Length: 431
Image (cartoon, rainbow, N blue to C red; front, top):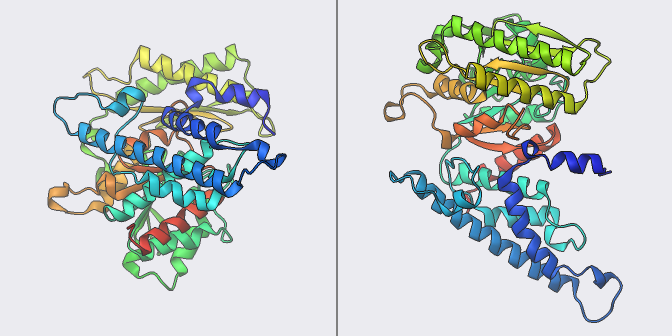
């Protein structure tokens, strides 16, 4: 049930995606003009097939027009004059596109599944547009190039929040199928464990399935890594290890930019974040305890049975983020940036060194090999990141948009459906 509380909360600026909201607004016009809610009660010649067909035509035209605007935006991205595109003027927060988006084809695909054009009382929704964009991105990475790397968030993407990836999960077979097709897999999670046993506990269903798979060759079994703490701990598959994972020393995978972050600067940033979190615990009277790690600091419920209110978690994220931006700005004494990510984990709040853009970039570098012109890194248009947190504040998948294409899901079940779509598109090129 949609309550006034949920509606008002969703209207907060930090809880919205402006591109999706803008598309929703465009689609609302034909919905108002062509939907016929009175057709349920009147017999004056209205045909449901005719009205839904007309709505479908107009929706498709709008998506085609947006597709053209995205193409124009991509052209402007490479323009040295830096003149903003029409799309950038209309949606100031729009970011970088690494591929074209076949939005018209994606809309028709989703309309066959969700019957968007046939609805007369419910206009095209946020979720409708989100799924259309997902389908368009899947079509793009399989049509205009070759998908080489798929990265995944953990909680809410591969398994329910706080749970583990069990052997019965339907997502496991889909991920193994990707590995069989030589698509590399990276699980980029906020969980900041320093030992393999903790990750095995969360991912044992997948890791055991990979180890025992009859369809994967030994080299293909190595097509998976775990990147923990956003971008701080890398583990590779190791069939001879007790927990099927082996830690990779930082000097083997750090990018040149990451290697420039000094330990003193990292500690100073975490000190400021810790002080801000303590203030939030005090000022908001949070039932929380502080947790400090070598590359992160956060708050967790002092009693596991207690849930900290969502608004309090959001307030804490925004306060800490602003304090870090204003006080240290993430910069060290040599004026080199030390990125951080303050995010709401649903039950807790953490500040990590780095963010998922760095985590995905490490996976691109790790699997890229020596590709000459590719600078030893899988390119953004060859990468797909799947996650559930893409809103601009307190959402740690958001930054992945700067280094890869993305798909925004809302549950593990949606991930399964997305991977089925991906397998279908990989089997046939978009005409």
